[in-house]
Image (cartoon, rainbow, N blue to C red; front, side):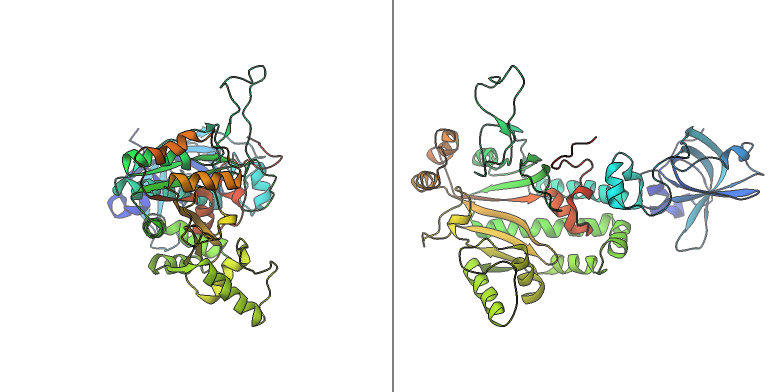
Length: 456
């Protein structure tokens, strides 16, 4: 038997393979059996599009058996690749050999019809075989690769931060406690699943200059919204000898790099999302705007003034607008979608609504924080310049009630050769939702973990 190839290679380099004998392995999406011939739509998982396999009674000794191959069955096929001249199906394989590798019964849940996403979440182990989820999870893989490529090309060091930690990096208290029955003192102190790798990332930034983390984080909050999950992934770079301006420039460059990478490496998936997922069919337009824009910087105080002007002009918000609030999604969307019609950074938030580690500004009221807001969703990235002054950080921890004894090692980073530094956090699933137009976080995680759900 000849070597197998992959469908991606056949579509991307079809001129090389047309009129040649090829061989593939894959799973049947549809089987249209006629009296003396039939058509299999087969997907091998390497490409968004299926490849059509034409099988004829005159060519196959097992023709009658092939007619009965069910949706979901795994097959191996050999045949001549033919150019069809049709845009929708530019190539097909005229089979000379078809072999059943893995049979599939008629009750296979993913039949060739429209299924609700709620139903598909109940068969999450099978949903990657649908058009939507094959596209989503292929894009998820590509975005992960793009993120690593972006940072590696700029000589950032990839740091693996601990999943089990005694530090509450966010000060929110919504952490999963880690215990083992009968071994509560296994670590000698209470420990939790991490909510962020930032604090440990700062330690490595003080040695390697520029680093990034990319790993799972956990939040024990009972949120049932479409944007929250108990387990999700975070990208958290830290850059030493850097201020807030450098931090925003890095975040902007990273997002543009990811979008450009997807346009180049997943055009079929992006066209699918634009046509079938985004209700306005403007996904590609919005992403292109972000890729080509120069992001505006807007202080929080000015953002509040713009929102108040909108209220005075008759704009109605469900959430009250006043200085000191944390901007709601509707406020962010107004700024990006209605006022600026472009992505922006909002900076210098009130200190009372931000974390203890953010650098206190000279006004004593705000911190050097930034949120990246993009059209369509609002906040995509949050970050800050970190407080490098030991005395100011200690006072801030005292004011908020963050225990210094548990984070004495973190204070050491200021005692021993500390420098100004900055960083941000990008929720990986938030990014996937943004570039695909998929609105529910449960549909961009292979096996989502949410309140009352840890299936699979």
